[in-house]
Image (cartoon, rainbow, N blue to C red; front, side, top):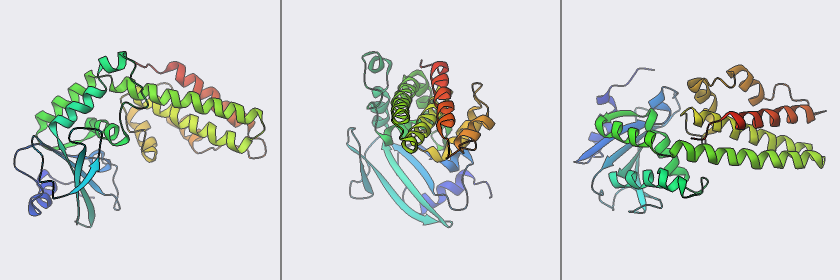
Amino acid sequence: MREMSVDDWLAPLRERDLLPDGVLAAFVVGSAARGWHNARSDYDIYIVTATQRDAGTGDPIPLPLDPPFATSETFYAQDKRWEVKYWLDTQFDQMLAKVSWDAYEQGTSAARALTFLEELTLSRLGSCLPLQGEDWVLDVRRRLAESAFRSFVVVRSLGEVDDAVEDALGQMEAGHLESATISARNAFGYAIDALLESEGEYGSYQSKWRPNRFRAAAPDALSFEAYWELETMRTYDPADPRPWIKDVLTLCQDIAMRVEVS
């Protein structure tokens, strides 16, 4: 797949008048930004401006921000579906304020600090591909790194680990081994997410990229081979699932003890 230049990315936007005046930043996000895309992948681009675009264009995406929405435009070019999301600079200020150290120390719930889209948006900043406004991107990356974002998402994932482990133990004790297996798998996923988030590899809501994120983070606590053996349930025995469940739960608790929250 040929590597695209900045002009390759921007030309379809200019042709459709989707690159407004006064753009502070434009950047590719998602799999294409990381080189993980394939022939069937969509292209996702974020555009940041200081003033709101014409409200009559684009599909609104509700958000708990001011204004309470972002907008998106979708089109097809180069045999790809392109989705362009438009954000205001002040909306990034608001999202960063939600994960400030003041908010963290005041006990803001880690599970409710950000919506899915807000967390996904911030998590993509570190790996985005700037097309315009690189200084803006670098500044917001710096502010994100100095915020409590990492602590918020790690605490959220560790809380999910605890809940899933308790579910699995209770279900196993009651003899509901199929349900215990599912709960153990959930606990494992959350534990790996916490481990990767502690390494700065965010995006836990998109579990399809967990192996890629694991390889990128290369955590010392667990090898990729050991991770993949459990992810693929290679040693699981349907006739006697208890050993597998216990091994997974033990690993989850070990990871939870090793992960640094702040």
